[in-house]
Image (cartoon, rainbow, N blue to C red; front, side):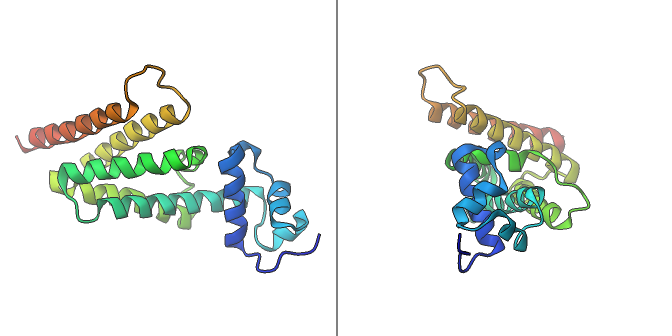
Length: 193
């Protein structure tokens, strides 16, 4: 194999994500990435330290992509409209990349400042969306967790074919968004009493 010109760490991560998208995260190996890069596996060590390092870089990329998608969706919106846009963006990302969910479910090691910062950026988008509801920090954290659990759970079930009934899944998601927005509004009202 001749070395592939222009191979960078970013390109290695992109190739690894292609493997993940096609066959799932458990099938990722350095040999598969090297084959796609048209290099010998040891050549990847110029760009990544190990398979664990590559998985961390994948997580970092996915979390940053999610933060960008959520930020873009929420920009210029407020209140319930912003919550619905956030939910739509999260679901859309997971519908496009159903095998990337693993990168979004585990809290990063606190010692990994770069990944922790990227993960915090996702939360900050949600906190900004929730600000108009008047929640204090703790309540915003709880609300963010609930939104994430509901939307991530829905998208995961959808991706795995977990909704077997014939009723429209998109309509079910609209109901979920209505419930989330109404629930947030109710919580905000209770907090003001």
